Each structure stands twice: as C-alpha cells, then as structure tokens.
Length: 140
Image (tube, rainbow, N blue to C red; front, side, top):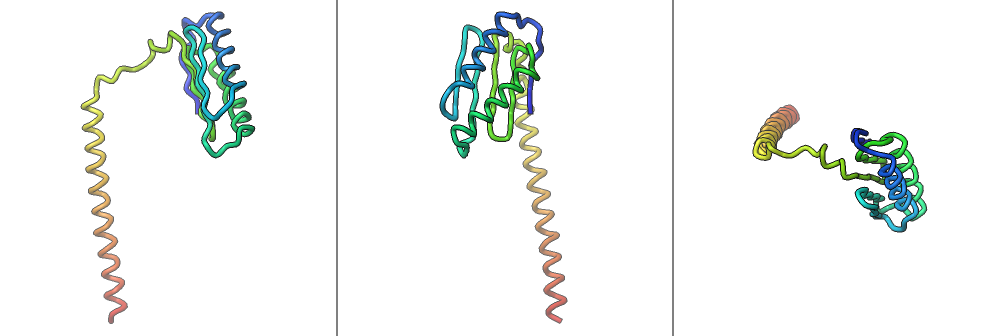
C-alpha cells in the first residue's frame, strides 16, 4: 500500500535531500531507522521477525518503490508486508487534515460498538435456539 502527496512545491533541492535521506535509511542498521536533512525527514521500520539481511532487502524494495511511485510528492508512505518506509517535507503539513469532528467520530465509534453488540446478542440467541432444537430431537 502506498500514500503519496501532491508534487506542487517540491523543488529539485528538496528532491535531492529526500533521495539522500532515503539512501541513508537504506544504508542504516537495525529494524528501526530515522534520518533527516533540513526540511526532509525519513523513517523506515521492519517487523521484528526479519533478520537484518531480510530487513535490508525489504527496505531496499520499499524505498525504491517509494521513490519511483511517489516521484516528487511532498510526502510518501510505502507499506510492504514486512516493512515500511516514509518521508515528509516541509510542504507536507499543508495537506494534513485537521480533526474538527472529534466528538462526531467518537459518536460513530459508540454507535458501531452498540450495533456490533446487538448483532452479537442476536447471533447468540439464534445459536442457542438452534442448539435447543438439536437437543430436543436427540432427546426423543
């Protein structure tokens, strides 16, 4: 899965810094790697069950695809099965969506929880009715 930002406002200097940051992440050590240069920040991470060589291979693929598929985007995220890589620039904050509907989303979560519980109770009742009928047949 990938997420790429728009390319407006991303100049060649920033692209060079982005490539340098992503290159330092590929050359890093460990399952979690961070780096930055001026207004460009980068981060990469592997799941814990990968060896260092497997992590390196996964990040090489993720960062290569990130650079290719997001091009000059002001931010980019690349999620592969076992690793993740991302970069952001100073222009990325312009595209962050503020959460003006915090209470609205909380009410949606509460509603979904209630509906889920009601569905669970309904399924339990159906299951118990089914089991009662089976035991009634076997008892005769």
